[in-house]
Image 1 (spheres, protein in one colour):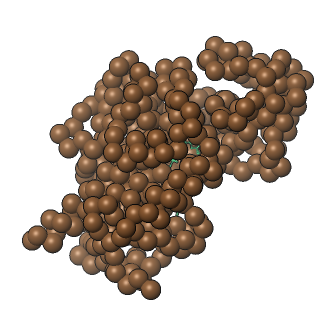
Image 2 (spheres, helix red, strand yellow; image 1 turned 45 degrees about the horizontal axis):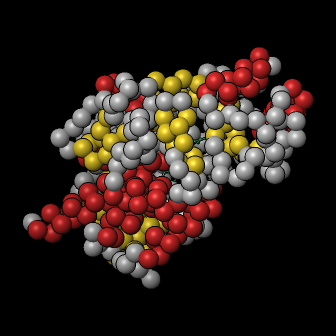
Image 3 (tube, helix red, strand yellow; image 1 turned 135 degrees about the vertical axis):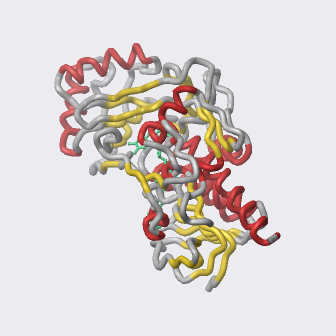
Length: 362
Ligand SMILES: Cc1cc2nc3c(=O)[nH]c(=O)nc-3n(C[C@H](O)[C@H](O)[C@H](O)COP(=O)(O)OP(=O)(O)OC[C@H]3O[C@@H](n4cnc5c(N)ncnc54)[C@H](O)[C@@H]3O)c2cc1C
């Protein structure tokens, strides 16, 4: 049984996978733990099929390192343009498989599954132990700031007024091309007029299949599919293999760090001397009352995320990545997409390793 590790990471979604591999590659003994029984988090288990936030306005990678390595390992097709942005279509099973392979093949990295976070112990504002294991540094990749809350660190929360949950499900046997926003609008408009809550269509690698993100209630999905079949050309034979629909939560919790990234920073394309990641994804807000709002950065620009947004303000050895970085409700509505979770995860792994190196040098 492990009794001590250099770096412990809680949460094995996009952020935690990247953080764990990068921390271990830096030479530190690393433990990744998750309450689930395997790696993947939202990217692997919610039905999503597009990795967002990887590219600039021309479809070129904005971040290299592990972010690009992981994206290239799961890629089975070229990136596709969706209006003003580029996304990478992927299969969730491949996301999980590649994650598992990276974790298994990285020396100094061990995983504990079916292991909820417990017993966080602090001394002099540093976490010294969690789950009975002595730790040198901790990275919170839980999406809801579980480590930070247990450690008494200050947090901000998004809620369902701007980050409404959604059902994500595949829709098969669709013969209509919806690859441009104008083509999608011709389907979305009659749905809105019929009173359905907002939805959008995402690319899928399965032929004749779309991924639907529906900001409605589970019991409305059957009516939605029926409406599409009866009223929209190209959807006459559409169906979903799912028999149960589960809401996926967009809202999360952000840990107050040494710098709070703001929506104004995002839209101004702000740059930082201690930048660790780049992002050009818009601020995307999903209102359960019916409005999806996108605020885009000026064309050709991106913003940066500083290292200080990945370090907790009040707990000396706590780092964060993915949905928990130090950002306000507007900034996280851009930075929460998986391409950026990978980038902040990789950066947090490296930052935690550097922190331990300088702590040992003292
Ligand atoms: C409806 C919806 C649609 C989206 N669409 C897209 C999209 O098309 N493209 C895109 O790129 N992004 C999309 N996103 C955003 C993106 O999927 C998430 O923000 C991102 O995956 C978060 O990654 P993460 O690693 O920060 O956290 P998560 O993937 O949420 O991982 C957190 C992990 O922490 C674990 N955990 C939590 N609490 C504990 C605990 N107490 N103990 C142990 N383990 C714990 C969980 O089991 C989980 O495995 C969407 C999100 C939603 C909800």
